[in-house]
Structures are given as structure tokens and as C-alpha cells.
Length: 532
Image (cartoon, rainbow, N blue to C red):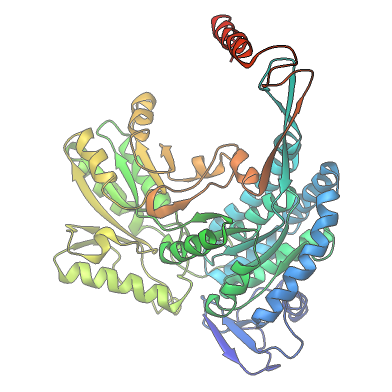
């Protein structure tokens, strides 16, 4: 949670923080925010304890304008930097992230409240993404020969130019992955970046920025502003050459509208109400363990986590027993080590949403199979991993994204019903299918309306397949991150076609009618011999 206060009233670091989070570190990171020296300040609190954590200067629209001015000046030089040099910087960043793993794990846990194992997945993610784009960017960005209009006579080349300055708006739930991965691809494509991370987890974003500059990124190529979207969102949109947004569907719709007004591109990863399908031939114990990993990472505050669980009627009783037993054994707590299985929610508003969804469901007849209550004895924002049954459409939790450690279990009689239930949503971000028969599982997966579908895995298999695109369908968004599209979206394609000797118009001495007959014959010949 963030609280505004008067200028220069800096908050002391909260109690219970690990030794790595020193006043010197906090001061160094917050000094990176683009804001005036006399800016108003905002303080965040640690979810584990509710004690003060970060104290940030608040950026104004004028600060955002100034950041874009600097970014545009820096971007020209960065775009001219050879890809090999950009690669060197990105691989150095990769090494620094891994070398200082424990420091950023502490920061993520302090700001977000997640467990260390969930935070560690973000470190792995950034290492993989940095290495991938460092080593594939040359392939994606280098000039590419294309077939010309006339074989041999038309030399056609596709070029890729950076968009310019990219706005990245990143959320609080995955503060390292979402802050750094999109910036990495945009930077590698030759763009500058002006980023607004969620204030609650801005320290992690600033830590990424700090390391990127240490790795050798030129000044002003990546800048971070802090503030409410209602205050600086307009300036971030009005100055952007491209918009990358991760957040709610409601905000995404507004951003898509604004981007359309300006005729700039936008990539939006939005909400989800993700399904998991457990077929009758699934390994019950493996599927139950997979369901735990699908539903409760980062206390369920994960866009690709599962909130709807569909189980074949024939195995429902055994599966539910196994899933409930595993869920009840999960260790909930605040620990800056790998001992806890489930951490805290991040904000009071998220705790309120989770509590209201469960309370509403129970009041309307749902059955709580596990969890179902807050745990203030552990910290101000803890909530037990919760399994609900007998959930019906009139309950809020049935269709609306909870974004917390809550899953509803349903049953199905056949595959057609399972697919129909899984697709009965406006969202389409991620899904999971479980079956002992891999081919059968993949066939079902192909029919699920979701941007990524995992077979015998929750979400990490698809997310971690960095060479493949990741993104949503329907109300879950537009565009993709990862793979070729994840970097090419930050570029403008340009076709350069050099026509030699003869073009489409008749040469001197040949009538248009005769020329038309000759071209028609040429087209027929190319089809006959298999020329594309």
C-alpha cells in the first residue's frame, strides 16, 4: 500500500527487513526516479508487516515530459549502437541479476509479500529472457531478403527500425518479471524506455534499472517515473511511440482506445479466469500436486494462475480428496528463505476482494473445502489457500477474476462439456490440461480458447518457452510477449524494393496490349513451375 505525504518526510526502513535492504540501498534506488528535487513523496509498506518500506519522490506530468525529451535524445545514439554491443550489455545484465540474486529476492518479498520460491522464478525468468533476446536479436532485426515482384529483376529487403520511445506500464504482482522482461525486448530492439511501475513494487523495478546501467546501458535510455495513472498516465500515453501495458482489463480497454486515437501500437496483457481440466485418465496425485502449483503461487496473484478447476466426474472424489489434503498441508508464512509455501497478499484492497468473493460465495451456498479465511495472526494481509465447491453463476467468484488464493471446483461428464465449460468466459489467457495420454491432452488443449495452454503443467511450461509467443485472447488482451513477436512489436517494418532493368509498365516499342499478354503468360508460367 502507498501513502502520500509531504516533501522530504522520508520514511525510515520498516522493521523485520532483511539485512540486504539497507538505508543506503533504498536511497540509491529511489534517487533514480525521474522527479523534481522538491517533489511530493509517497511511502509504501511491507505486506508481511505493514511497516514502512520505500519512500519515493512522485513524478508529475512535467517530469514525464522531461523524461521523454531525454529519452528521445538518447535513443538516436542507442539505435545506432551495433547489435553486438547491445548484446554484450544484456548478457552482462544477465550475469549481474544472477550474481545478486539474494538481494533482489529480498526486495521482491519485502515489496510484494510472496514466498522466496515464487520470487526465485522471476529471477530465472529474467535470466532466460535476457539471454534469449541477447542471442536472437540479430536474427530478428537484421535485414531480410524477401521475394521480389519479378524473379531476378526485383531485389526486395525487409528492414526493422525501432519504434522510438516505448512506454512500459508494469504491475505489482510480478515486480521483476513484468518490470524488466518487456523493457529488455524493447531496449534490444533499439528503443528507449520510459516506465511506470506500480508504486508498491517500484524498488524492484529501480533495482533492475540500476543493474542495467551498471551493465553499460547509456544514460537516459531507460528511465522510471513513479505516480498514479490518473496523474501521469496521460503524459505517458501522449508521448509514447508504443505502449506496453500489463494490468486490468478495464485499464487495458482505455489504453487501447487512447492508443487507437493516436494511431500507435499497443500490447496489452490483461486479466484472466483461467481453467484447468483434469481428464478421467489423469494421474490423480500428479494432477493434485499440479493444481496446488496452478492455483496458489504468489498467493494466487498471478495473471496465469488457475481459478476454475474442472474434474471428470469419475475421478472427482479421489482428486478432490488429494487436492484438499495437499492444500491443507501448505505452510503459510512470512519468511525470507525457502521455508514457506504460500506468502501474503500484497495490498489491503486485494485482501478485501478475496474476502468479499469468498463471503459472497458462502452466503449463496458454496462449500468451503479448504481455507476460507484471513490469517491476521500471521500478518495483516495473509489469506488461507481456499478451495470452493458448489459454486453457481450468481456468485461473484464464478465469473469474475479474484486474483487471490481461491479456486472453484466443478465436474464434467465428457470432453465436449469440459471444453465448453473452460471456454465459457470472456477471458482467454492461460489454461491447463491433465491426461496420461499426451496426444489426447494436446488435442484438448488446442480447442481451449486461451493464448497459452499447458499439458500436465500449470503455467510455467508455456511461460518458460521463451521462443514461443505468450499473450491473451478476448478480454485477456492484445499482442504477445516472448518469441519473435515479443521483440518485433517494438519495431517498424520497412520494405525496400529495388527494381532493375524492367518493371510493370511496357518498354518502348511494345504496346500496352502486347505487354499485358506477355505478363499474363509469365504469371501462368510461374504458377506452372511452382514459383511462389
